[in-house]
Length: 307
Image 1 (cartoon, rainbow, N blue to C red):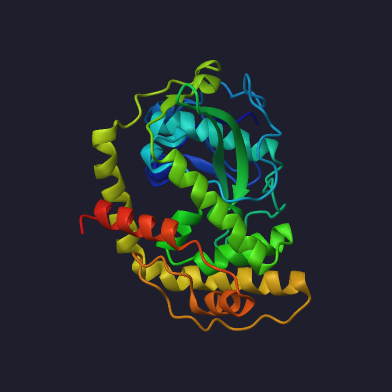
Image 2: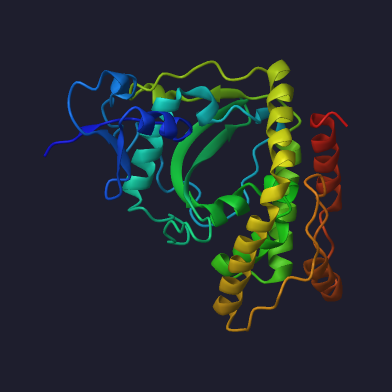
């Protein structure tokens, strides 16, 4: 039987289900079980987005690396600039063409460990003209995405898990991982000194309607809302720790050693210091930490929280 497919944003799934929509576990998509269900018409599917977007560079940014978005560009990402239904179309295309696997580490979705498949944007920054251009969309698992947005991982108390996953996937040792993060923060600081014009023409060329991104004066409110959500999610930190322990075990297995239990306390959302076990290891090895970028991030987070 031909199904009537729907484009249901994740945030509206309960509403769609109550209106009669059904979920296909094979296609991982909602559908109307029969014609004439008027309550579902608002989610009527639009044409699929092509697997290769015009001008997209599928080789851009291969491998796992820390990819920090300049603070002057926060909340100007694709998701904030398209409708929820268009985002669902893009997310579905990205995960489908990746074969429902992370394009970096090859992991599949795992509900038990709260590992999901997520869409991530790769950007090209034109320094001469001050343009931040979308150049690639990539499917990442939660663990790889956590490493990529390393600053947000720090805010959420997942810095150690991010370091462990970075080392497990790339083969870096601790000193190399710290140097990599330090270089990423140096680049972030330089790019955060200026404003950027957003170029999403890769999406508009395939019929995705792009909305005006949040302007500079609106980003602080958006940031405060996002950080408030992080603060309100402290009760979920225990579940994050469970997943972090899973990352620790996989990293230990990758290195051929037994996983050690976590010894560092759960950090508060505002704390961005390196957790004790890794800090001690780095100090023993005689390697310095990227203190200045972390300090700036801490100040910026505190200001956005209104403290």
